[in-house]
Image 1 (spheres, rainbow, N blue to C red):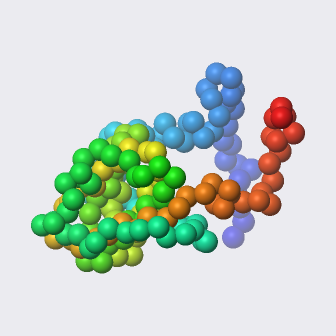
Image 2: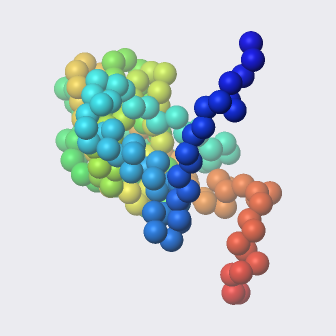
Length: 159
């Protein structure tokens, strides 16, 4: 089959980053419009981040359910300073909200755990029968960052 690309003429609009912003800003605005318009209503949002390797476990909650959940988990709170939380669900599912992400509600279930970063407000919403716990790890940013990553901006930092 022959391509008819030459016959179809598409006018491409060039964005001026000084006026319209860069492409990531445009994409974020479009995503937010979709969320605001509730076009994703009923769709589940999962945290697909990969848990960093090599972190030292420093504690965990007992298994909780809708009957024995610590009440403060259901309110706006933060993970302990310098500690990374790892929210895991054994049965059922629950919702998780970052207070600084307008409109995003993450679903956490047995196949989709969630990483809870320190010093960031969040809360949990129980949506039905559930069994879950939170494991805590010492969070050392030097262990998490990629030591071999390309960092072209470092030459501009004054030391």
